[in-house]
Image (cartoon, rainbow, N blue to C red):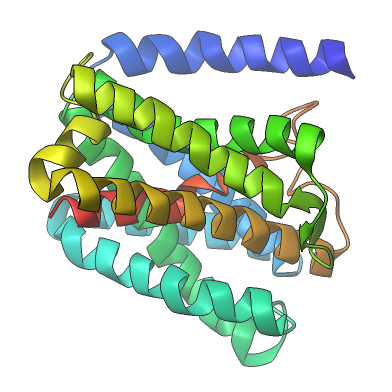
Length: 269
């Protein structure tokens, strides 16, 4: 299993790193578009679309993405995605409605298109501001995840959402927040590799509100992670798919990014 995970990770990095660092924006946008379409396919599967339904849903997401690239202003998409995560995300986690049934499924199928297209626009817009900027945006989620893992292992006592993701603890979530605050503060104070998300937050919001904004992003990285875990638990699967051997599916890798990306760009105006 470990060998499979390592091989998959090497292959992914061999594709993603050169494209992110050196490719033109168009090539980068196309690659992220493919990622989004595969994630949409998994979203359709978790919502239990029958037969070719997930494929059709992924095609709709791809067409919506292409259409939006030419005619849609990103900011309203970011606002719609943010409203979804601020309202529907916590509601689903607290009330735990059956997400793949009735009106909820219809709502989530529509909302999913908005979420994925907004995510694509956010990544592309971030890349247009520089490689360091887009990487710093991703770093928020990576740090929150790594900090949560080690803090949870060492100190975890209180379950964060035992009925959804038994392995997550409140101490782990706090550890992830500390990691983001520490690295983000150092990056903002030193201006290393600026412009980054951290320097942009301080420049636009000031120190206090910048740290508050990072706190919000960490919180919603947890919401995105738990929301996908709820979808998987209700679908009765461990992973969103087997597209990435040893790692699960695309959604398993980007679930925390889905709310963070548009909310971060929205905070910067």
